Image (cartoon, rainbow, N blue to C red):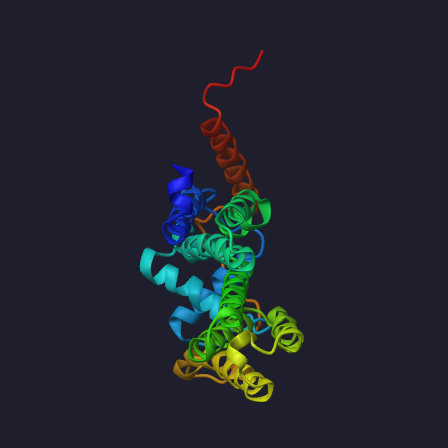
Amino acid sequence: MLDRLEQRPVLLGLLIAAIAQSLFTIGVERPSILLFDEVHYVPAARILLDFSHITNPEHPMLGKSLIALGIHLIGDNALGWRLFSTLFGSATIAGVYAFTLLLTRATRPALFAAIFAMLGQMVFVQARIGMLDIFMGGFLVWAGVAFLAAMHAESRRAWGYWVASALLFGAAVGVKWAAIPYVALTGVAFLWLRYRDPKRFGGMHWLPALAVMGIVSIATYFATFAPRFFLPHRPDDAGPADPVPVRDAGAPDAGAGRAQLSVELVELAADAAPDLVFL
């Protein structure tokens, strides 16, 4: 079975992505309360949906816009907060597979790289919570895939992959500014790889290549602020950066939320080991 799938790397990659999506989605709505930095990003996404003002300005808008889109499609609930995190998690696993496949030109190392990434706690946790890191990571991984594809491609196709890489890097910066060093590292890697073998990247000249990388990635970054044009207020008039949600009179307090979290964690453990017998 595996030997047959190795002959069809695209099908194998899609299968890995489907398995990852299932793993990341099952039980993602539990716990049903905001966890970790969801307390910042989910309220910011809610405000963004209202087109009232900008909040959480210490990060760009793309990641919060994706969370807001999930809330718009599914509802203001745990699944809505985390829907696009699961999608980007599975896309990240598929990207690891594609990156390793292009790097090694072998299916089996790519398969094991994807499995290790899928079972690692970093991607697993980030893919099941409404935070920004999985969005940035997904864009960066696929930007690396496009970079390697450009390195191996002929001239015309190399330019297409190169522009795609610049678009994805710009989107990654549009999620978190922490992605900026990766754009700079890409330029350095391009110069070094092309110096070692001028035929790489379809023989494209270094100056226009770096210019395209810079212009396209910066333009993409600014394009991620498109929702800003629908806001009636200037960011200076927005109010506090991190809104503190107002609790309704009938809403549970923090102690009740912690108690609910404990109960749901116990239920998750019971579901994971239904046959466990304590002696």
